[in-house]
Image 1 (cartoon, rainbow, N blue to C red):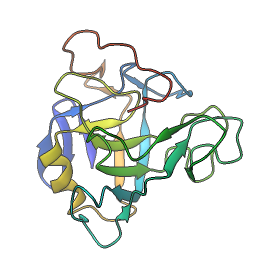
Image 2: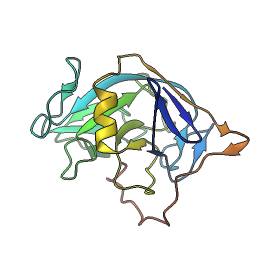
Image 3: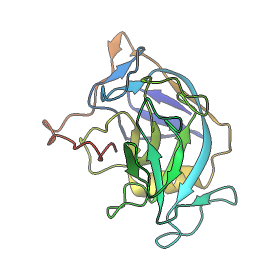
Length: 184
C-alpha cells in the first residue's frame, strides 16, 4: 500500500484519501495534526460488531469501554486501554461512524516514545476534503474493501514528498477546530 499524489494505491486500485491537516511530516509530534512519513505497517484491525460484520477473522471487536491513550507521559501511551481511564484518551467506540473500522499502524506502536504521536490509524473519513488529525481517512466503501483484503503486517509507504511537492490535505476549506478528544 502506498500513498501517491492521486490517492492510496492498494492491490492495483487507487482510493481518494484524506491526510492530516498539518500535511505530511518527517518529524511527527503529538498534537501536530500531521501524518507521519515513512514505511509503516498495519498491525491490528478493530471494528464495530454492532454496526458491521467483521471484515476478516483477525479483526477485533471494539467494546463499549475501549479507549486509546494519547497521554504521552502515561505508561499506556499509544495503546488500547479500558474505561474508566484517568489519563487523556479518545473513545474507540464513537457515536459517529469514523471508527466503525480502524486499521492500526505501527507508528510509535507498540513501543511508544513519549510525544512522538499516537493513534495513527486508517479509518473512515468525515467527508471529502476534510483533513484528519494525522490519520489516513477513506470513503466507507473503500475502507471496507481494503479491510476485507489487507493482511496483518501489510506495509504502508507514506513519502514525505510526492513529485517534489509536500502533499497536503485535499482541501475543501478550513475545518472547525478539533477538541482534545476528537483526534480522528
